Every structure is written in structure tokens, then in C-alpha cells.
Image (cartoon, rainbow, N blue to C red; front, side, top):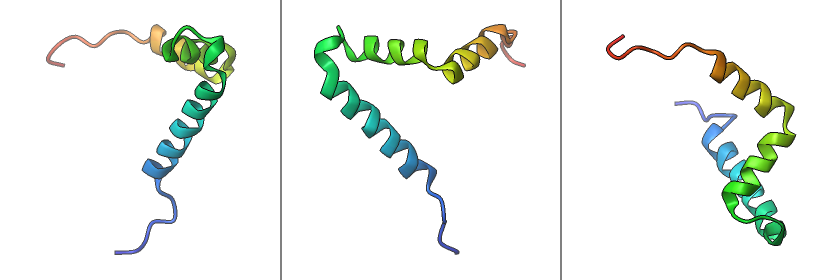
Length: 64
């Protein structure tokens, strides 16, 4: 089997670690980690667009 050139799990873990490190460095400014994440989402155009698309999608009916 060929070695992967890109490891998406490693990338995800690295990104999550950077975000958590940012929170730890600034945790005195936030009530909780959840508050920190919510504020990041509010400042992110990408996150806002993603939420808009999710909210505009019709919910699936069970067993479909």
C-alpha cells in the first residue's frame, strides 16, 4: 500500500490543538471553551456561511 501524502486525521488534530492552545492563552477573556468557540464562529465568514446552508436545508424524514 502506498504511503499517504496527506493525513486528514493528523491535520484535524493539529488544527484542534492550535485552537485549544489559542483558548488556553486567552481563557481569561472567555466564560468557557464553548463561549470561545461561539465567538470564533461569529467572527468567521466561512462558519457563518456554513451555518446558513445547514439551517436552510430541509430536515430529513425518518427512514428515508
